[in-house]
Image (cartoon, rainbow, N blue to C red):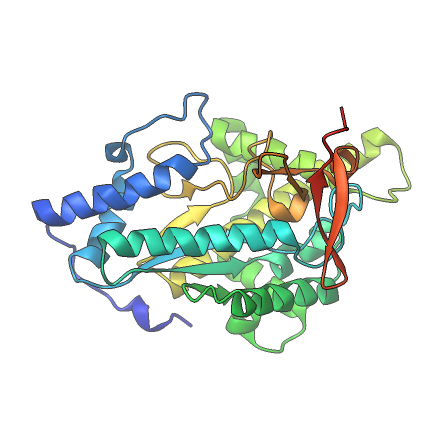
Length: 323
């Protein structure tokens, strides 16, 4: 299943000073947008040796850099958080930012960079309560948005590219069986590793917040979401390993907060008060000064008016009269 860039190569020698400088400059373009897990997010480029090594493999051979970003899965099923099940202004702004970031890289590395959006909605759609037809519609609309906005440095990749037209339940089962860690191993990691524990708690919180129409008590919902959170992490790990098999040389980005030195580089797409917030879990509000912030729809409605684009709800614009 690996793609053409999965060729086996010998370990790379130490980069030349010129290559090292270029890689450092590229990483410095990423650092202002870093989504960090530690309280003090300030860190120099040298704190990210894994990313520097990955960049050097492209720069030394004068090749376009490949970045992979799992994310853009589908909209939250909670209507208090989002405007609907299709991409809106939050996604458009985020995609434009990612394309612009690749353009900035090209200014210091002539072959440029391409970013592959690895849409993971189908991987765990059954666990987060989003039907597969909504995920297909979101993914197709996202691809159409990339074409319409002429974001030529972005590509997309999802389960349809891997397993074709098989039923989604079959696709999920195959990916889980081949790549997912065991539940016992993941539980042990959650108890032993602070970063994994924060991830588990963050996903549990999202599952609770996204739940609509749960028939039981709040405590029963929390127990159910804790159980499903393990499944989401298992599937996410499986998807990450599958991406690595198809794009083994890529620089791996993440929409989740990451510590300095991790194999994944956490990246912030738009400003928000919560480091876990993404465009697919929120609505976009345009402030009076022209800046943008992601927030739940229920809060944005109290701060601005709804704006439609091509007849569909797009975002909110700040009302200066709002408190």
